[in-house]
Image 1: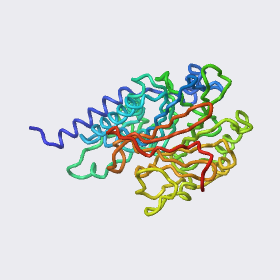
Image 2: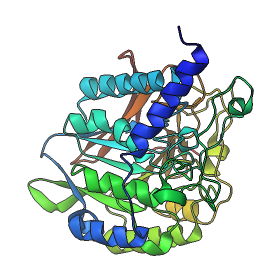
Image 3: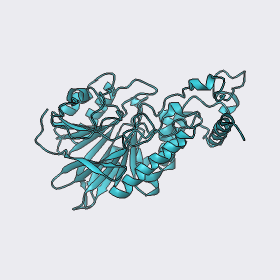
Image 4: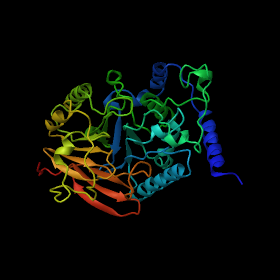
Length: 401
């Protein structure tokens, strides 16, 4: 009988070799970007061309999956089991709610736990329940999605799992022999987005403007009525809140992009706007409910302090100045699932959907329901056991700070 060490070592080496063989060999990321943009120009063009549709007299339902953390501890028995459990959570929510659209709200993978270069293999696994049901989706990046691999300390102990060895003459991991057998540099945001768009016709994700890089997932989608495409029901903005390969922040350049774009497509703030990013900003700390007094907040989990972005660079001031902004949705804090009123909008958390990442709280997903004529934005949380709670009307004109 083989020892647990031998079993683990064989499983690790088999996993790495199997996955490395599927890694796509890129030339220049920018060259690859140009090729893919030509092939999928209908999804990387102007905001007006990125249109979702709602049937007259019906609602448009969106499921938010946050903090899935696929690929965590992939060399153990525990890690892959968590990914299976996460797929069960998503499958339950999708089958119960039958949404028209899905938003992956960051930390789709735990890249710093993935000992291969191509995290897209786990990203693809994470979106499979949505894709297999023919449901379109969009994604934003979180702070774990493009982090470099972190060597576990236990691998360096006498009983640990030995890492693969790079050739002696390699100047850095991944440069020798075309990167084969030594691919621990991680997968960039650009590569993750390129792979998602190249492999999935149902993805509405975008790279975003080049001048906002290294921030990548910055774009806007339009929701229109099928009987009148010019009648816009809502605009949905997606922003990259950083983390991983660069600071956790929505930059001033992103704020300026939002200001220009919103003024161009919604100059009089007549159309409702809904905002998505991963890491909460400083305003979430302002409304964060105390353990003993939740004020006007709606939710079931208030067990953590808000872990906010590193700085406020103007984005929130712009949102506060637009009466059309109805709500902001974030993930990141696994132990929070509330919605709190703030000035002219609501600040909301999703629900921790994945079994990867910290915390043992029951998993679930936030659901949004958008109706038209008159506009309404309602939300609730659907749990992995089917239970529904924390319903709130986010389009209410009566709010308190």
